[in-house]
Image (cartoon, rainbow, N blue to C red; front, side, top):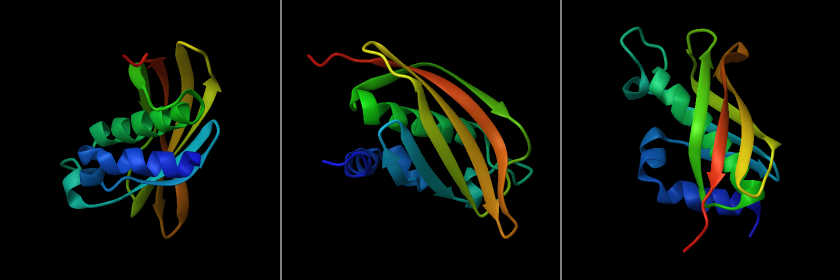
Length: 136
């Protein structure tokens, strides 16, 4: 199964991801791109994407990127998010990459872009440390 097919299957099983409207658009070993459309339910009081959803997109993209090299049995051990500007757009694109793979932990990084008629703007970035969970 290709990395893209694997992640689309995993994404489809995650009810929260479906509620958010997250779609996996690119998946290669060590790299993932996901997208989510804007809708009022994901905004905060000023009409910007809620910081919780910013964290969701970064965490999800990083986890998926790690999954392309370590398999699907991962848990976030730590993640950090830097909100760089108000996240306003018609859709949001998170691009994550594996910084350092390992047998027990995978380090990842992600940039989040808001997309509107003027193109993409970087609105946040973050890093995630994921722990490989042994089956059984």
